[in-house]
Length: 279
Image (cartoon, rainbow, N blue to C red; front, side, top):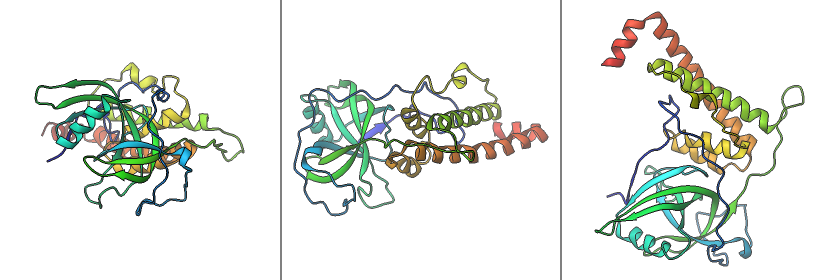
């Protein structure tokens, strides 16, 4: 039985049915930070990204069949015994744990990059289950496991995007310009999707960024790709904002081409489109 119950707050953009307001930038670390540890060799998680002992911290790990992004909201229900133990521990510390994507079709913990989840609201029930509202914070790279029982605890290092510059064919351009292109494509995808589903355009579609800088905006865009968790994981692992935005731009462009063709079919055969949507 699964150890959690998850309710989506973001709608897949292929095509999207609605859109929540973009999240704010992740909050900084609490003053009470995780305990620092020395690196331990870990088979299956070796990486060219070596970290010194001063860069590593201990973090409880919660494998889930989803990808959490910085700034995204994650509601959870905790009922498995070992994760209830984890929650009791977190309630006396800094309420932070690591979410690591676990693909059911692959060997356990095939990925080493995840996202810190901070519990921003919780409710403990009489049967000792927990309802949680979590928010994605910084990304981490798993270095080694400190222990595996009663729940996973790993030593991790935190990731930040490297500075990047995008140049167009004329030698200009910037990451900001690329973010604007992604926002334009996303707006068109939502507009066409709403048109195909018979929904009216809302004001939220007009301003998707809400003054977000390119990096948190790229995380927001990635968080909407819920129907493709492996693609989301690839986006999460990128350490270059421009590379992430470029990949999202390509995905949105392909989606827009598909929706444009579907919209054209609907215009030519409106009756058949409406009857198929009702069936």
